[in-house]
Image (cartoon, rainbow, N blue to C red; front, top):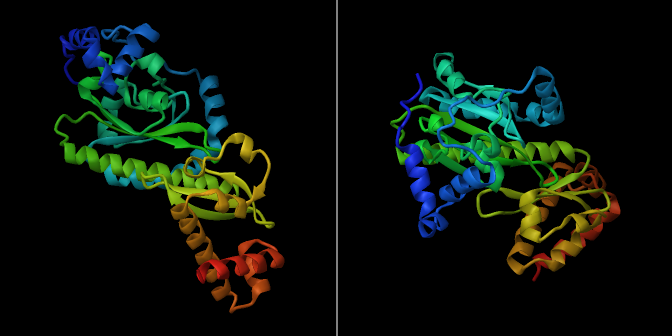
Length: 324
């Protein structure tokens, strides 16, 4: 059953927002402020989330079906890790609508009561501060724990969420792990957050590699949160795609990526440590291809998906760098 409705939660929200100094220092209070002042929501609003019509859900699902399909192994693995702890797993689109879900049958009546189900709308504009909606509003991983929610009806939930960015670096949706349990420890929440973030990164990486399946994918430095930068490079060694982590690491804009450009240009523009990381990753890929091809350059070029001339240029450059 749902947790008891804290009668003083709305008072806490209003008191926090009336103290401007305190509110300015809190990310949760900033979201509460958006919920109240931007979206015009009432903390005591007690209706369940809005459910999309069948046609609306079908349209939303169709738009993201490719990503949903690719995400299945990561969602299953995440649910295996958290399901027995009383958690459900949701994959949402960019509007905060769950398109896929995993849950234990014995817990589903509670989650259905809260509206943690496919087709429900969990945007911040609709539900105020909540894991999915606030993650999408801010584009970052977070946990909204119990009375950090804006609506009193949702304070029995703990929701840990990571954003999912598509192959072009755009915010596509979110991966959410939610629970009604009241006995979660901070250590358990950290473990759930780590597992959720790892699953989101696996989904992003698989989507990128599938989107650029005819190109060579070069792994660059991570973004400081464990997400590796991925670059798609064609047969002529031109960069034709970059995931969000790579865009941030190398300062790549949409305008820069609008036309393919030589990967060597990118190396020349990066800081020394990034250059070394990129070169090491590229050197490893070349060495593995040569080993598989028994030293045959033409065969190695085919394995890498580049022309023989491109591989010769690459070998010459990497040889110079390796000898520095």
